[in-house]
Length: 264
Image (tube, rainbow, N blue to C red; front, side, top):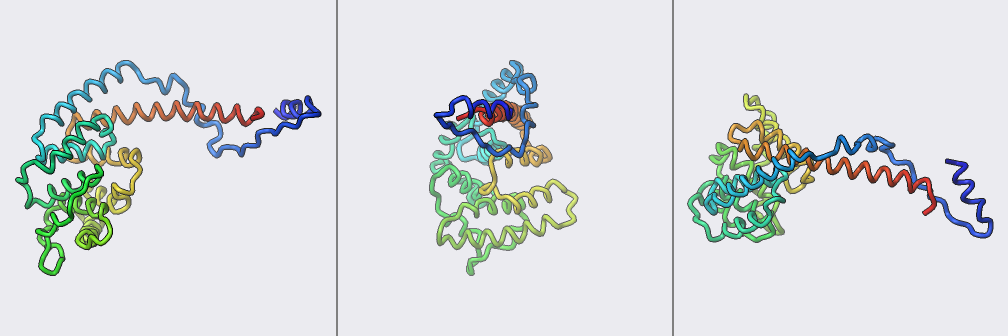
């Protein structure tokens, strides 16, 4: 390598050409171990993911607009990292929330989830929807602590607050205190403690989508109410994307190695 560089500088005495002087990558040649054989996406995987995708798309489209069923499905899709397959269907569903039946307006979980999904999608929904859950002094009702799902949804929704939304500031304080209690409690439901700990550490709003998806797959799997088909699809999709990223890292490492040897 040194002889090569020396030859390149001395072969043209009248023309000075700069040599590449890249710092060594901290990863070394680790990513070169991701060979094409290891990162190949098989035809069987492609067929399976397409079959799952169409079944789940049908499930999403057929769920009643604004229903808890549809809200929970969209939320799970987004948190499992597979929502990008259904962008159009999800956008249509979110827009229809404004016109759908308000059958569950007194349910903290539903109202919070609806608010969360709408704002995550870039649409506006007034935080006044939470006023019915507060006392006259603006504090949230203590009876809400019995609705664990509602606490989780309200906590995530509170991270989508904008300037001067005091009710969401109060919501953040209220839910944080109770989720901290769950995280350190002696509950037999360990998955609930794990979810509370993760939420407090990295709310959805502050989590890298792929990292969040990997963590949530484990949490979702331990939820007795999880959708088995959606979970299988999420795992398969995650593994396929991982192979793609590994192949890209291998290619980048190879090109980095080549460019670090030769003159730009």
